[in-house]
Image 1 (tube, helix red, strand yellow):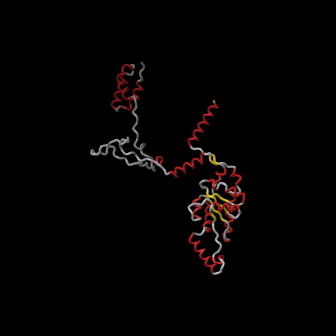
Image 2: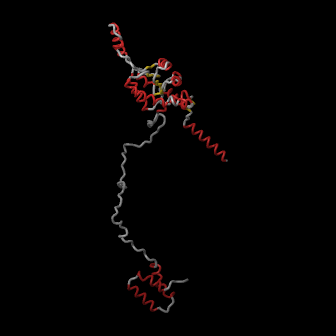
Image 3: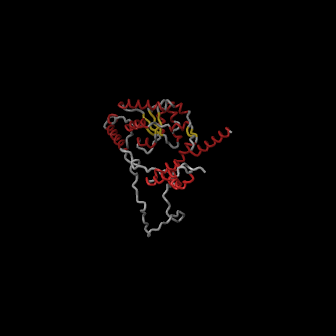
Length: 324
């Protein structure tokens, strides 16, 4: 067994002894200079076993200090006392809720799916879904291409200037004309020629056939649609500008009715000629000039989310089978 030299033991243990102990060790070395290390090894073994490992130096408090000029971030939330606990009131017992039949009140939830809607609401929703799913022929699909919002606003602004006279106004006009005729005058001298919007399906169709209509406006939501489905083709053949507009209730407000399927303008006053000509040119660009394009465009065929997911799943299965 090899032992460390006495010199290394002495040097390694010098730092850990007081001067008095060092002198004693030096005397032992001088006395036994010629002796072998095994003779005085027991003198150094306790020191070697206890003090051979150098203890780690203690860290300086300066090293633990934060750098100057930097502020330590404050805690994001106030630290509460760890030992503080809320005391429960013994009068109130905790009881888990039971949402079974006849037990606790059920939590509030959205029940719109379970509402029994009126019949007209159900019908109009089902009709909309069918129009989306089924293929719609071009003659009917063109009624979904309505006039844009700005042009429609200008159109109704012009139409409101030519609203038909009410019953009271008509009664007053007829009374004046009758009085003038009784006095031997002409009725044209008393009342000017009225400029008004023409309405009524048969009336407007007659005006279009005789080429007396200057502008025809058709509602997009006429029910049944067969009543007006032929009007765009008739207007184009007769060279009468037409437009499809939302909707029949809005057209009805112009002519003092609840609804109106179609209205027409035959002539306008001289001060409105420029505005009317601009409106007609804008409408022609969207309808009469694009009639052939709309005649070939089918509508519908829009499937729901479930059907689209099934088609996508089937397509992926076919692709994976081809790769294999």
